[in-house]
Amino acid sequence: MTNPRLTFGEMTVFGELARGVHPADETGLAMALALGQPDPPHPPCATVPVLLDGHEIGRAERIDFVWGGGFYQFSSLSGNTKFSCSTREELLQGLEDRLQLSS
Image (cartoon, rainbow, N blue to C red; front, side):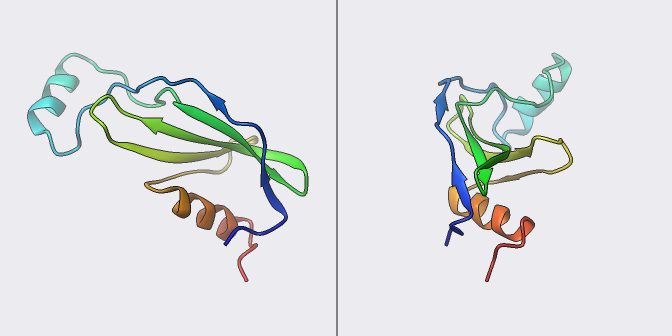
């Protein structure tokens, strides 16, 4: 599925867990809003540079929440492109689509 032009650098693992309420927990959400819980960005659990033709174009991050959920996020170096998805496969497909590498 991954295009040979798209590669990845060395992963850095931070191991941080993001504090957040479970999306289905309405009471927890109301409490977080009342307490002024900060909005994203969440701390990454791990980050990896994304390379196109050997040049870094951005970073992929894995965000893990205290309550057990998580997601993947890509941010370009320019800051113009940012997207999130729930699986690693969706992240790879999203990169291929946005870089027009899909066959």
